[in-house]
Length: 176
Image (cartoon, rainbow, N blue to C red):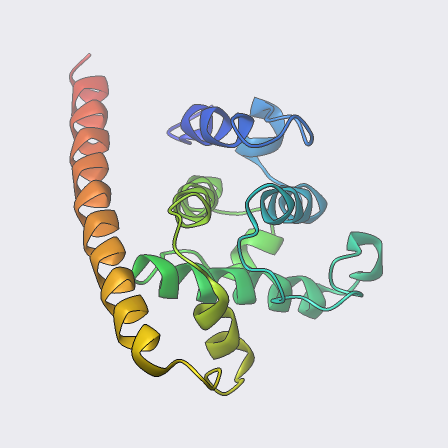
C-alpha cells in the first residue's frame, strides 16, 4: 500500500500491547478511534503523557465532533514534539480526514520513541496544558534538566540515524 511505513509502526507498538492489533489495513488509513486506542494503550503501558487528557477525552466514544478529534491529536503532537525536541510533520486536520497516512505513521513512531525513552513526560504535559512548573525542584531540577537534555541529544542522534536508514531504504526501493 504505497510508501506508508506501517510495518515499522506495527513492529514498534506490538512490543507494548496486544490490543489494538497493529493491522496493515488500519495503519494505512488510521481512523481516529484506532489512533485514540493506540495512544491510550501506550499511555497505559508506559506512563507516557499521563495527565494530558481529562476523563472525557480518554473515552473515545465521547469525542464525536471533528474539532474534539483535532484537539485530541494536537495535544499528543505538541507533547511529542517537546519530548523529541523537534517539529513533527503531521497535521491533525489531515489525520482526522484520513489523509497523509505516511506522516501519521511517522508521527506514531515518534510517539513510540518518546514513550519508551525513559524520559519523564510530565514537564512537557504541564507545558502543553499551560500549567506552571512544579515547585520544589531545587537542586534536583538542574540534574533533571541535564538528564533531559542528554536524553534529547541521544534521541536526536538516534532519529538522525533512523532517518538516514529510512532514506537509504527508500532509495533502494526506487532503484528496483
